[in-house]
Length: 243
Image 1 (cartoon, rainbow, N blue to C red):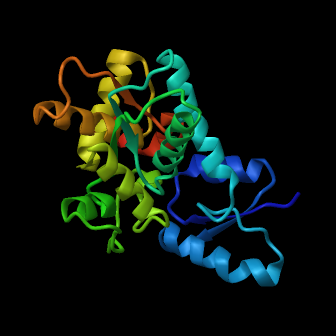
Image 2: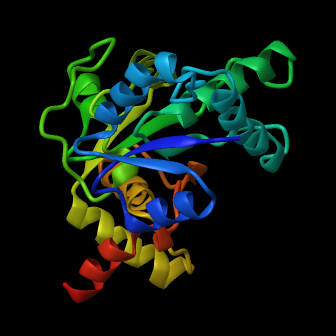
């Protein structure tokens, strides 16, 4: 089965090489992931492609949903107090929330929900900005720039769903600078043996900021998702280690 993948031209090299190694036709686009989405949408019909970009097919959210079920299993039929998730397209948050609704429908949990925390990059923080303004949807984030390519999404297609989940759960949206992310990644590597992507670093920064603000308390159970491997960001890690 043929596969065409559109990526920003400055996508980390590992992602490009891996995709091509598996036989994908990789198209490098000058711009952001939003420009890649436009490229695919414009060519899909005339090229006969089946478009599988975020929230345009049913399977990704169903796959992400399993994270919510796994949390319920790991916590022995309960849920954590706080979930911190690095948010680009935000399907992870949306999927877990869907899992919690299904668990309640099956009478496996009650109305309780974890406080959902969206962690974003300061250089591309449309959800944070919208949350601070208590908007129902975000605006396109101009001049988006961050080393965390997974967070460089200037406007998520499901932004209204992400924000609704944050509000309903009493959650938060927190931004981290690139410098803060890389420092947090070094902490995770040195203290926990986790070679994380900058996205995971953003989540740890959000955790520390919320602890400082006393929005996460000592007795809270907290789950932090790291959504990528440091091996996909060797260029960024090299910069971090040299600084």
